[in-house]
Length: 175
Image (cartoon, rainbow, N blue to C red; front, side):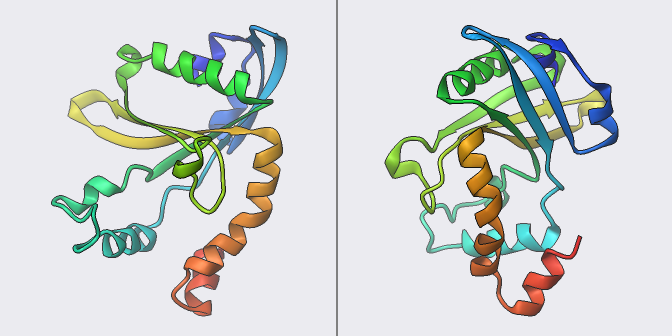
């Protein structure tokens, strides 16, 4: 949020009490709104599922398997077009070193071969190093507003496809 607040004319602290905020940011093309959504933390059962998925003989199945869980904490930043997505990514990259943030990996799913299930976004995997050596890894999804609307409609189907059973699906979506 600090990276965005440096480029916005208004910053709502109500985000800290809720799960979304709208910021008016200054882009190269002029001012525009950016929506920020804080997702629920990844559940323990979903992380266990990912560990099972990536165990050998999977090509990512090397020790420690937990290295494949890069998104226990997720934040989506929804922009109007790819130019804004690139600018926000740059703002986040410029913030490295400040506030204990470090960009560990960038995943560009606008490149066709990197797109999973046909979905497009740009992901930044960040570590936050806090007081007393506390470290947390999380994911920032930079998304296009039009694609985000489709993503929200299709995500339940994605969860259903992934579910081991209907009971598991209902438990995972009952929040």
